Amino acid sequence: MKTENAVLVLVLAAAPLLMCGCNTPGTPQDTVTITYEQVGSCNGYQQTTGPGGSGPQTMVSAGPSAAFATFRVVTIDNSKSSQDFNFEPTRLFINQTPKAFMSSSLSLTRDLGVFAAVPVTVAKGKSQGNNGITVTVVPTVAANGASEANNTSYFLLYDTPTPSLGVVLVKKNPSQTSWAQTDNCLAIQF
Image 1 (cartoon, rainbow, N blue to C red):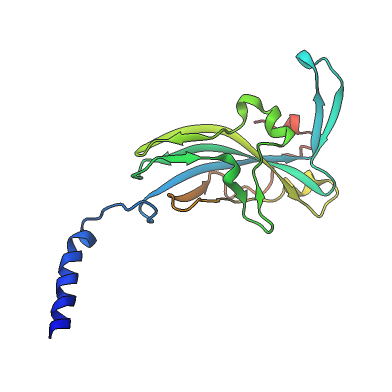
Image 2 (cartoon, rainbow, N blue to C red):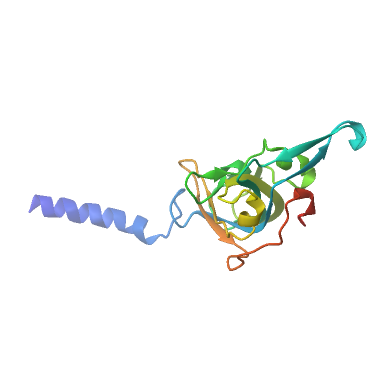
């Protein structure tokens, strides 16, 4: 009898917590949604170095049987969360094995300048546009990597540190399966 009474007391004590609908950080109700779109893929480009772009040119390449895959982060919606979200573009990765993480150290990412996605804190209860481009290198079977990557729909995930918000990624163009053939990265319409 005493055990049953103790269990009843615990259940009654916990009932208000279960019924309050409170958002505990890290629970499924405490999520941020990142909307993104795949922009296209390319093999490389001629990079001009020196002041004002007047220096020598060097070829930047994704490498043999590889391509640069580019994505635009459209919005970061943290409106349903009870905590701030620290967005880090390099935590985004293509859902494949091995994971292809976005990189801020790639020449193409650095050469995007103001168009590149940057780390940002989105306050709890807020949503904000981003419009930044992220880049990774994807392996391909085709020697001309862009020819394969521009006919592959890639989906992103976010490597969420623990404890943190849940992150849901929504692809703006999920049914699109091909993009214009762009061997030259400078031809992509960012």
